[in-house]
Length: 215
Image 1: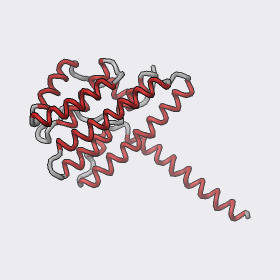
Image 2: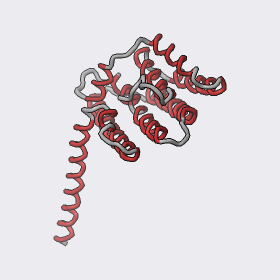
Image 3: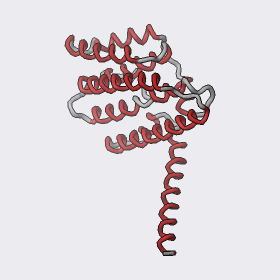
């Protein structure tokens, strides 16, 4: 019986140690941008793994923010959560369509672009929570809040310009999905900028310097 307790206790210790190590590792990872973290790798699989790891750390950070909100009793209620779920569904729909139309034919670019897009989507839950958090030392929210951005008119024009790289039929499909995403958003003008930046990132061609890098 004692041996059984010792084995269970040791197993719990290992789990606790691993969780602590992962948490500490995430603290170091999130002080970097996703580009900086992924660019330390060279092969496509390693870059994808690095972005997945970064995404896991973002999820962990987001969950911690949610826990903090619950403790302060300042958090989104049922209606706001429902609106955000509608936006998320439209976001996923736009992303799936845009990634399919922007694919370069099963290349490494496609794999990495997909991984970046999946990571980049995670910013919207952070932005959603950020509206309920006045002061925080969270590195991701701090980075998002301090990000210098063009004005909304410029972003709209740039998005329309980027759409012109697609055929008329593709443009119509992308515009419809994008309009649905914008209409489902309860974000104000400031947050609409993030939607345009994200959309530009997903649909912009692989050639040339990226206009809207992930966070």
